[in-house]
Amino acid sequence: MVDSNKEFDDLERELRESLAPRAAPLGFANKVMARVELRDKSAFSLWRWFTSAALVTAVLLAMVLGGRWQQQRRQRIAGERARDQVILALRITGSTLQAVQQKVQQSAKESQP
Amino acid sequence: MKKQIIAALLALAMLPGAAAFAQTTQPPFPVTLEKQLAARASNYTEVTLDRKMLEFASHFMDKEDDAEGKRIISKLNGIYVRTYQFDKPDQYSADDLAAIRRQFETSDWTSLVKQRSKNAGDDSDIYIKLAGSETQGIFLLNAEPKQLNFIFISGPIDPEDISQLVGHFGIPSMKVTKDSESKGSK
Image 1 (cartoon, each protein chain N blue to C red):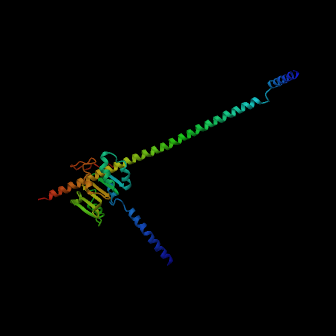
Image 2 (cartoon, rainbow over the protein chains, first blue to last red):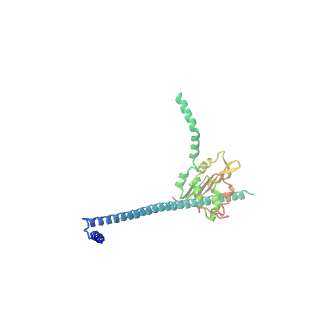
Image 3 (cartoon, each protein chain N blue to C red):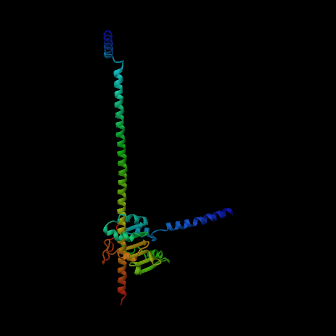
């Protein structure tokens, strides 16, 4: 009986000691706050890196697509101009041939008795 | 002696290249006097379309009306058009025309039409270049008192195709239109 009381007392004392309020070590709060800030900072810089990369990619893509569009536009204009030149050349050729044919026909008519 | 042999060998080695160079540097449009005539003209049109330009243009000839033209130019090496309009007659001489004709009076070319007039003011010529039974080029010269037209078509072409141009591209089938094509101006 005496032994069991003693054990109980020991347990109680140990519990009291364990659960007794203790003062935080010096600088504990500052250390915790510093770690929290560091974690926030790294998360922020990662986010910033992603945003910058996305922005740079978007700008590069816009430049490439814009350049290609501009090149295609220029090529189309040049092509349409070349087509117009072909049509003009064929038109002049046709009308010149027609003029020559008429002259020949006229000459043939005049030379007939 | 050794140097001379090396020089001779080098010259021999360069012969095919020189021949190819001479072929490629041959003026595509053999008509001279272009600058002089342009200087005297009040309006002139010069259209120069070599094979590359014709190929490039054909990619953009996708309209229904372009089909005939696209077919005609598909095999050509070039189309060269020169039209000169003058304010007054006598801005070119018979000698000018003779100098131009001389360039087609070679064994390669055959005169198909030869129309002569007093003072060369109404002359016409059609020359064709034959290779076997195939026409490899056509040269048209049409002189009016106040207008000169030269057309040089290089490459395989059926003369019938040119005749068929009449009725296409705004060329009326019967009526001859003069002085209506020139777009360039001085």
